Amino acid sequence: MHTTIDIDLKLKQGFRTLFPDYATKLEKATSQDEINLLQAAFIEERKQALADALGKDITELKASDQTAAIPLKKETYDILINATGDDIKRQLHVLIDGLERLKGMEQDDAGLVTAQILLSGALGVGLLSTSAVVAKLAVGAAEAVAAFAGVSVATVGAVVAIAALVIVAVLIPIIYFMHKPANAIVLLINELDKPLVFEHDHNVHGKPMLMTTPIPEGIEVPGKAKYPVAGFIATQKRDSALVGTQYGFTMGYGNTGTKFSFGVECPLTSIYTDNNCYCAIDESAEKVAELTTKKNKQFWEAEKDGFKLSIRCNSGSGSIAYYVARAYKG
Image (cartoon, rainbow, N blue to C red; front, top):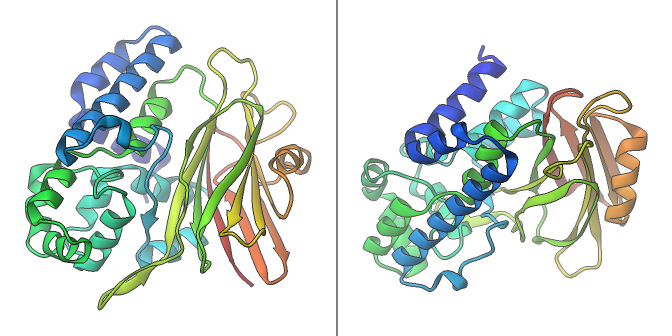
């Protein structure tokens, strides 16, 4: 059994191996402002590298607080929807760690790799790799991606080799280097037949830091499989704040008018409330942000008109709270 310390160490070591210069600078940072500047510079550097690989202007890429959706193979999906405690944190770390994700695909069928690259937008945002990993994937997956997306294998290889996960760029410096963190990191799984599209959010305390939108319905690769899709949403305390983060966000169910809202809280201290969560159908982001604190629960479910929502937190304590949330049919 891996401990929480093992999970943390593995992800931090992976970041240090891939980006040693930035890891060293972050470790030497003496203030939160310095960490923020390094983080912003890192994101812009990776975006520029991706733009160069795509032959695009950097302004054509998505904003740095956006990231790609993630296709889930059946084994991963089954683990996530049943995860509790440290298993939630462990599974989210595997997904946050882009190198681990792509390494895990080396032996997967080309369909899953194709789905990930297609979901990544512009054949690149959302993927992190090394040339060695790309070489292994190129045997089958790159050809599948190229054929399905109508591009050259060379384009796929170049983009996958150079693109870095925005998730990694945003989350890892905060997870490991922020002074007195209070962060809530949510993985939302879309099990419905329409995309989940961001509509509105509300921070009682803190500030949003990451939003995957849209989170598409399951993606089907012809002749391979159909994969459920998930996306990350995250919030953090403000830089010099003496309170943590208390946050609500609303996702629209396609253009139907139905709204799914989730609330999360990670206080700086647990004197009054613990890490908690809440969800509701056709409620506002403001309302769920308020109710997550009042209910102060680590698991919540909601049901209406045949739809179901659920959200579960890994622990009532801890300066970073991890959540798995679902939107599905009852």
